[in-house]
Amino acid sequence: MTITPDRKIALEVSDLKKSFGDKQVHQGVSFTLYEGEILGLFGGSGSGKSVILRSIIGLEKPDSGQILFEGKDITKLSEKELINIRTKVGYVFQNGALFDSFTVEENLSYPLQEHTKLKPAEIKAKVEAMLELIAMKGSNNLLPAELSGGMQKRAGLARAIIMEPKIILFDEPTAGLDPSNTKRLLDNIHLLKKKGITGIFVTHDIPSALDIADRIAILHQGKIPIIDTVANIIQSTDPLVQSFTSESRSKNGHQ
Amino acid sequence: MSLQLFRNFATNVGNRVLSVVATSGGIARLSIQIVRELFTPPFYPRLVIEQLQQIGTKSFLLVVIAGLASGSVMALQFGYGLAKFGGKLYVPKIVVLAILREMGPVFTSLLVAGRIGSGIASEVSSMKVTQQIDAIRALGTSPIKRIVIPRLLASMIALPILTLFADYIGLLGAMVVASTELGISSEYFIAKSIETLRPYDLFTGMAKTMVFAYFISVAACWKGLNTEGGTQGVGNTTTWVVVTTSIFIMISDFFLTKFFILTVFPKY
Image (cartoon, rainbow over all chains, first blue to last red; front, side, top):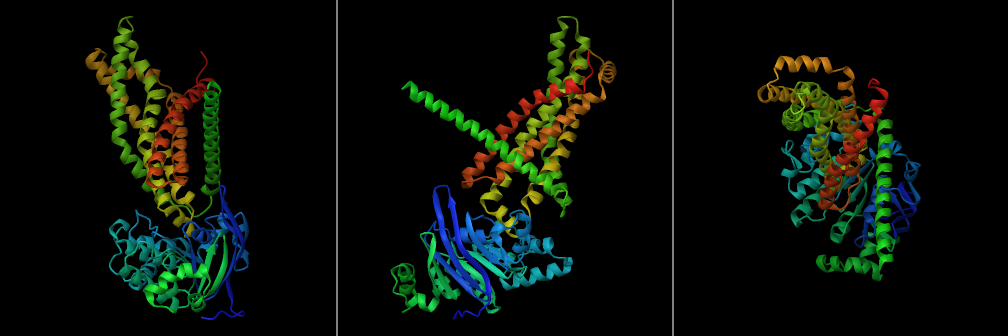
């Protein structure tokens, strides 16, 4: 996908700075997310990739900087004002973060019960459709503890998208999954991509990111020095880019 | 060497003081958030009822056994102690006041702090370390409304009721022991208990349990919501809650009793 300047901006992050104690995790992170694209975000362990996602949804308050979404600076909003943003931005947690005392159906219907006036039958229909999408039909009454890791993540994905958010934040969705579960999850995300979703895909799983994303951003030393299309990233001779892509290149035969 | 020891001592004391200040500040801030969110929609009465069932059913048997045991033991001890001075007939008066004003509320609250405080702490801290609290927020809902307020309201409703049961069972145990061991008839025990009791004896005991219930639930939720460090953090949080709430109950009981003596109890 080629990003042209006339594309509509979904989210704009400018000069984000964040410290935890003495450690300055973000030292001026800036990037733009366009509507209809998936941006892959690479970075070493502890580089602050997840913190960017958490800041976008207001779970972390940056020390300074701006995150503009629908004309509002998310960093300045109160917890009450953030509720509206959180119904429009879905968050897929690394481990699914399903409510362990709720069944799968209760987990999926939770956002609909909280934020819509849908009737129980309509909620049920939406949940069933979502379970079909993630190939988990019939698991309505299972508790999270009864699900495999892959199923938990897919259920977490379903819960994040059931409100049809404008942006979906994927926090290492394939981490810890075996190849077949990774493929299943990526198939689900491909389906969403065909529907034109906008999202940020944080991962250590480079092949998955190259497969799913339209552009790739690399977080290094608290900044994003490189952000480019997947094609350009694959062909890049930049040592920083190559440090991430060399493994994937050798695995998948990308030249 | 001695200077180094003094420095270490001063550092430890300083850290303890800072920790107490941070805890007090954290609990105060959570209390303000609770007040802000308590009266604004959405409300979750179903969650309060669920918590009431949890707290009530999980603690009932424990409280009944403790009430029965403490009432019986007190009757026995006072009976044999007072018999030396020919004061055995004062047992009902002393036991009923001790149970309603002190033993019932404090014993029940200590047991609930151990049973329910630890339960709330481990549940909330597990939710924190598995990102379920983050998920509640990320899905546009409030952990204060969904987690803290139901547990607080349920504790403040359940603990006085549990204390009433403990009081009743404790008096029953004392009456049986007085009758079988001390030769005090049940009729005399009941008559003297009714003659001695005043409404404020019951209400001040209940008021104490409300204060204890508030602290147990809010402290457990606050610590749970601020848990770090995986499963080890969950264990640390649970231990902290049981120890801190027990100490709070015992210390605050003195000040509450003093307060009630100054304001509610008649001057002699």
